[in-house]
Length: 289
Image 1 (spheres, rainbow, N blue to C red):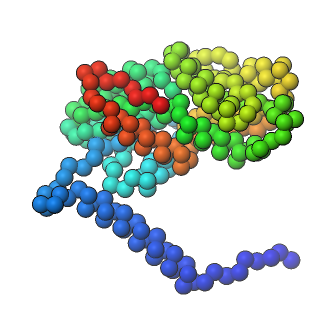
Image 2: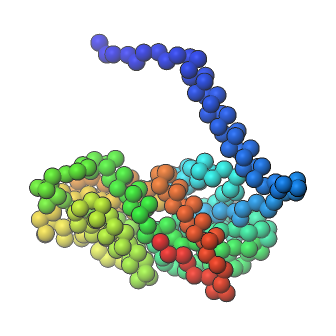
Image 3: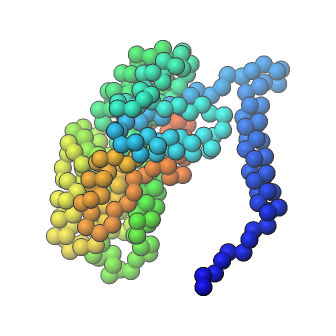
C-alpha cells in the first residue's frame, strides 16, 4: 500500500495564490510608478534589452530561449525584453530592431564566446538599424555560466564532494559549438579552467564543429591519462543538433544544455547592466567578464 500525501488546506492554497498575485501586482505597480517623476511627468523608460539568439531548426531551442526571457522579465519587471535571431528563426534581429524605431536598446548575445557573430554579424545589424543600440559582451566566460554548468552536471548524476579516489579517475569534457576565431577558443578554455577549479578534476574543451578536438578525441585523451569516469558538460544555450551529437559521445553522463537556469537570467541582466555602466566611445568595445 502506497502512502498518500495528506490533503492540503484549501484556504492555505487560496492564501498562497492570493499572495503571489498581490506580489506580482505590487512589482508591476512599482515599476510603473518609477517611470513617473515627482511633478507628474513621465520619465523615459530604460533602454530595451534585446536577447540575440543564434536560431535553430530544433523547436526546443526557441522554446528554451523564450523560457529564459521569462526568467529575465521576472527578475526585472518593467524592463522591456525582446528577442531577435541571427538566422533560422523569427523574429530576425533586423526586424526586432526595426520595431523599436529610434529608441535605445542594449543587445545581449545569447552566445557563450567571442566569434564572428559577436564581432561582425550583430554589430553590423545594429549599425544598420535606426534604434540607438549598444552591444554587450557574450555570456561567457563568467562565474555565473560556470555555476549553471556545475548545476547541470549535478542534475545529470555528477556526485558532489567526491572522495580523492573518485577524483583521480574522473574528468569532464566541455562541449562547445566551436569557431575558427581564436578568441572563441580562448574564451572556452577559460570557462573550462573555471569549471575545473569548481569540480577539482581536469576539464578539456572540445568542439562540435570548426575547431579541434572533437568530444570523442577529448574523451580518449582523458582516458589515456587514467581518467575513465568522464562526463560531458554541454556548453550550449539551448537544445539542438550540436548539443545532441556531443551528448551522444559521452561515455558516462552528459549534462543538459544551459537552458532557462536562474543563473543564466542573472547573467543576461549582468551583461545589460555592465553595458549601461560602460561609457560610450566612438568605437564601443565589448565589456569583459
